[in-house]
Length: 232
Image (tube, rainbow, N blue to C red; front, side, top):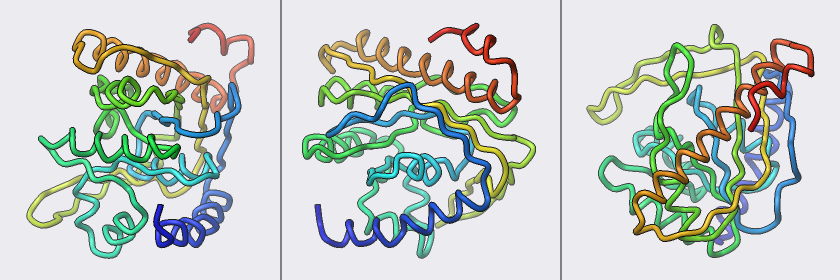
């Protein structure tokens, strides 16, 4: 890994931690310690700001698969490129997967949002795309499912045009932000087995949804006895 990527991470880390510490009421619960070495962090995606907030929870350098449109934004795009994050372009998903696999083979942490887009604005979840499954099966790295819940009333939808493309960002600037990090999931099989790939993607998303429900229950301060109702 280049010195530039390391330096940008160490300079930006205190900025992100300062923001999340002062502007968010962040609550993080882990079902297990994060394993050492290569791993895949897979989370639901209620807001555009999730990559930064989940990275703050990790407290270690990670490389994030991010919509290519954000790489076209002045300053932000340059920061993302120099930090080593991975652009995901429509129709070129395998290129992003290959770049992520290089990091995993080097023992690094990769973050992906399996829904492939923001979660539905009214709540709920998108069906998982298969990138997370292809990463897990090709690398053998464990998947750490992460469930996020926030106050949707505090989301700010901002429309913008970047290089002729319209995009709506959903920014979460302050408020409660609850995260539940699950136990490592291990998968085996061939990336050429399409049924297996689909099954793995659905399994990962199932765990993410259940963890997000646990985060929601904590935010609503429901009795702890109810947390187990949904199971994992």
